[in-house]
Amino acid sequence: MPNLTTKLLGLIRFSHTLFALPFALASAMIAWDRQGFEPLTLLGIIVCLGCARSAAMAFNRLIDRQWDAENPRTAFRHLPSGQLSVRSVSWFVGLSSIGFVLGTLIFLPLGNWYPLYFCVPVLLWLLGYSFSKRFTSLAHYWLGLALACAPAGAWVAIRGDQIWTELAVPSILSFAVLFWVAGFDIIYACQDEAFDRKVGLFSLPSRLGPGLALRLAGLSHGIMVVFLALLPLVEPKMGGIYWTGLAMVALLLCFEHFLVRPGELKRIELAFFWMNIGVSLGLWLVISIQLAWHQVNPG
Image (tube, rainbow, N blue to C red; front, side, top):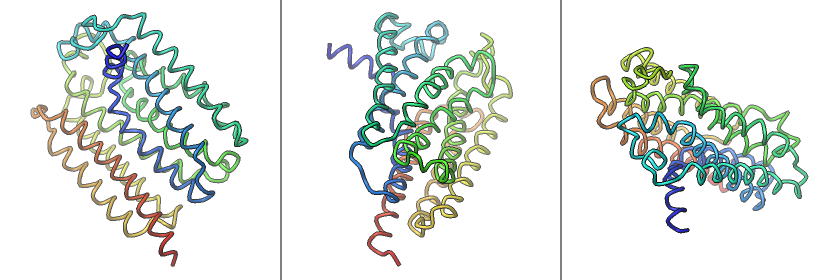
């Protein structure tokens, strides 16, 4: 059983939860600052995000197992290599999906029904991403919108009925995540440019070539920074600490694009994982520190 658990965590690349979770927590920090911290909402956010991501990632591996087996870069993955069976992964997808829906019930004692209302459409969107590469080169932006559900969902989970009058903060954070994820997913897809073109899968690198695709990734990351620069307009507590953090995030993104250039793709793993972990964790930390600073120095 422990071995199966380890393999399933490897299948969904559990460490990559660090991409979306910090943005969900950053959104939650701002929401809690407005109405006070409630431990039950933190539990609900972690359960829902963990189960939703697990379901979506495992479903993606399940649906793509044929392509993964044909692609030399991915042939070692758990399903094509036989480390996990289709049945076990199917069960994992089903249980994770049920866990996500049940996780929304955590918010009911707080009188918040919205997570339950939205859970099925959100889950369908997350699972639907796995089919997108078969018919659109904008699959990278579909994935971005899928991860953008994290900050939006955290806000809905905490603010409940207030969400209809407080759309600015979650919208800005969600759009920032959308363009950030789309940008780094375009970079990552450059590894499979030739394979995608050969088998007829859609991706921007296979349709535009790596040079133009990487420029589009850079533009997407620039748009992300613009959205984050708008946050202080709707959340006045974001001051000097936040701006310093945002400048560091912009530098990290620039360094990511320095590492990955047309004809120089060997450092994609470094750029993809470590740079983006720095972006997500860094933003969460500076937002948390900024809010804590404002509590100590309200003037």
